[in-house]
Length: 357
Image (cartoon, rainbow, N blue to C red; front, side, top):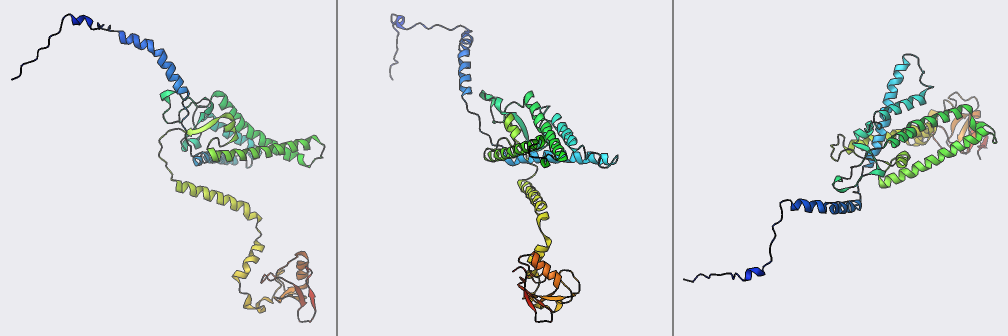
């Protein structure tokens, strides 16, 4: 069994150890108050150099929000027009710019003025943020969507630009068209003003097109007014369940653009020319001309002086065929769409070249 080692301290060696002072009860409070200014200065310096969190807002949502605002304004206008039609039909037609401005002012008054999103922005979970005064300090930044709303001056300028600007431009165009500024003499004041208006409109459209390209590239500021006011659309809530899928949204956009394209192109199409182009595919040209000799295909009457169009040998009135060949450089037969190169009297040897050469 081992002997226990007994260690004895030399009382003379205790004097060589450093003396330990016991801190007071409030020492940590004094230390924290002494170091707090330095910590605050360091945190402010670090947070001020922190770059903003990059966020990406869906471009489709922003465009859809603007489209929904237009549709809602149109629905309100339609209902208001129906009410006044019961009083006097066509009463609001001469006050249409004032009506549009009034409805736009109502939407602005009860949405942007009271720090709420417009109906279209609310449906797309969007709100306006003052991008020039966005706060990016410390732990306040969590998602990148934080930031103050529009200031009082931004709201007023937004109303003046959207409501007042559109009303002034609509009234200026109607007044200039009524006064016929474009038909006056070259040196008159009205004509020069009309030229300035047209140049200003062209410059605005070019600037809007440039802003559209920048918007498609970066996703910021869908209009010139928003870019000038630094009013950026951001999500109102980081989490949102989409009520409508992208499939139906894209389908609606495609059908809307397709219908607008048809409304633009249909008045430009000539139905008779389309029928002539499709005629060779829908009718057998080998059926012969025996069934086509009853009436002139132009005037739909019995030919008084019958002439044959060569080489297809369909029968026409002389004056009908002569005038058509003279008016159209490359006239084609109305029945078979064959080019008419000459004309011959029906039942006779006389043959002449078509006037179109």
